[in-house]
Image (cartoon, rainbow, N blue to C red; front, side, top):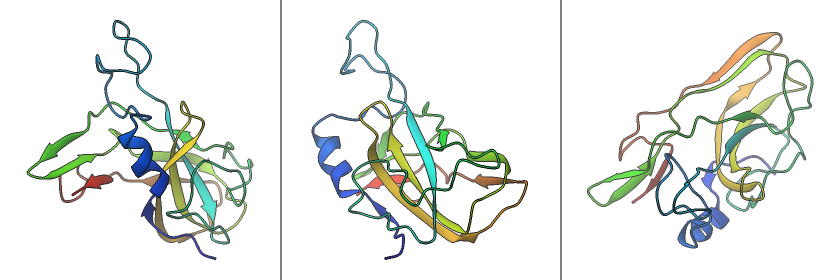
Length: 157
């Protein structure tokens, strides 16, 4: 089975249950009304032989790039400083910085990134696919889209 781009089905349920805190801390945080926190969001790269998609429920090291050549198992920490917002009937959120892996030597061809919430038991948020990559000692950057109702990384219409 191939990796497929999707917002994870489990995330859609979990967001309604209030299990994810994306963006800037608010006074409605799960942990404290006086000292709010945001969740730590991470992004992990997966080999083309993976099967990440809508059914992905949590981060898994299965078919993730091997922790070699400056790739760390679990991926990179996402800059989670942009608050979710809305325009018209669409709500949306995009991380506030690109995902960057420097001096990366991949352990094989990879074609997707899974975004997940490491604070909340590594619960999966979304899977994003791109053309197959195989990198030797290079920088790999996933440029974040414009944070608006048409282009944001996560959109509910």
